[in-house]
Length: 279
Image (cartoon, rainbow, N blue to C red):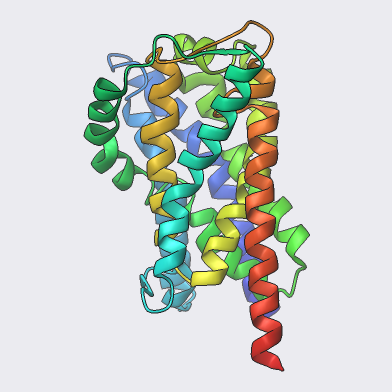
């Protein structure tokens, strides 16, 4: 059993790492494409999920590993928590930034921001069925079968999720977006993103494990994409030079630590609930 699982994990990891570079190769041939919205980016986005599905078909695996069932019964509170995580943490970071004068909120206008937020929800929902779920859903379920401890699972899933972003950071992402989010080199952004994904993975993995469903994570990530990215890229806030690495609502150190604490909090709940069930 373990040999089959390990083989499937290795195949998944190899294809995931290559997926974006296959997309880069496609874009190098089809040069007349819009920046930040190319066929290569599409390949990069969907290939991990397609790979997981293909592995499951050919290895006659268990479809429950994906967590496609919503499992609403008994988990409504987790859906609500998932939707609120990013708004609450973002609000805390903005309060810290405003208090320290590291973040300027004078350009923030609530009504147009709400309209922008609402208009992107459907797109980000569809996009996030592919972005992240093969990692904190399928891959996590396979690593659990190997009886790995939680910390190894977080590290493997988070690192691969970050490494998967290499072509995105180094090639696909427009330079203007990089400078808006974190004004550093592409290579530095990539390193910061790996660390961020490891912190995020704890939260997304625990949402998956406590509900046995990917959908709380999809909804949470949907809210993040529609809330945090426009907040920064569309200029609703401005961050003092040199303070982005601390209080950026997307990649800041303080921000990532808060998400890590959220994930560890859910982990504590899950472990206590499991112990109560056993006893």
